[in-house]
Image (cartoon, rainbow, N blue to C red; front, side, top):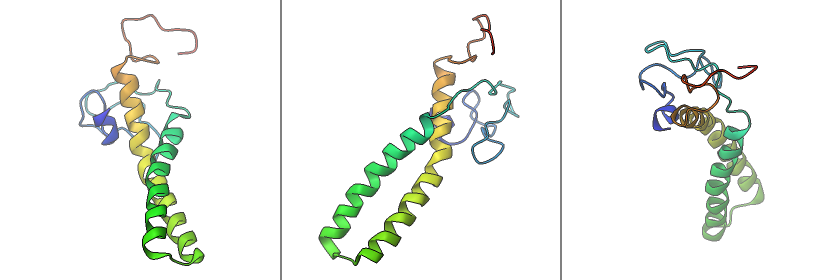
Amino acid sequence: MARGFLLRCPNCGKGPLFTAYLKVAPACSCCGEDLHHQRADDAPPYFTMMIVGHIVVPAMLIVERLWHPALAIHFVLWTLATLGLTFGLMPSVKGAIVGLQWALRMHGFDTSAPPRDGE
């Protein structure tokens, strides 16, 4: 999961995991590990929202208690913080999910199991 979080191939840790912002490479350019069958689906956005929410909400409460900024300041500050954290963390969280699937041999990463229909 750590290799995936660092946007690297979960097998070798050297090749890039993504070809674009959230598009997983079909295979690792260094070790050749097939990555096309990963199924991260809705897990990365869900976990990213949980992480960002646990960072932004306490920070918002602390800022309000300490400095009492105007509502316009709150709006701008927390909108930018939420968007920045969300777009910044999403690839790493998706990489960690792909790394977890690889480590647990889920969704076609298990080469010893016969392929199921549609994989």
